Image (cartoon, rainbow, N blue to C red; front, top):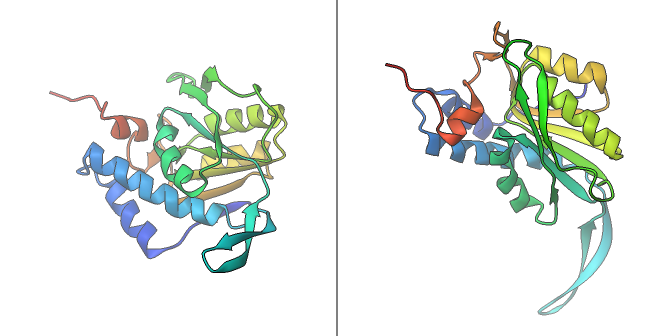
Length: 211
């Protein structure tokens, strides 16, 4: 299957801190940004380029420019935290938003925001979401992106569950998935085990306090 688990000491160390329930929201956001940069680096190794040249202070040097128009598609809301670090790597990337929430009874995605289809489709769409859990939102997002006319789609996630990978690839086997780890399974509420909790709540500091 098109699944790439990025093995690197920095990723393993940062992911450990990301999972830790004691990590503060500020720390959690910072780690998501670091991991997004590291995984995006791996996910973009096959981008097409074309030759060019630039004038340096001392002469002319050969160089390369990216050939493809690249669109970043964060799945709201948690995917927003991954956009800026990837834009630092690809400053000319376009950002298009898709919003889904999960029906807690059916565990199915419900679309509430779609900002696609307002321009010519990009050459490569990169879906970003910290968690690939049930795969429902990811599959719905890719379906929308494909309908837009995008020929190549990749997905970047911090963590993935086997069920989510299977669901996405059952619908779209050509989508390349890049992740830091594949965890054991989902629980009965659709959360990844052992996972890291609700990524959106931890990013935006909206975890319900008990007691």
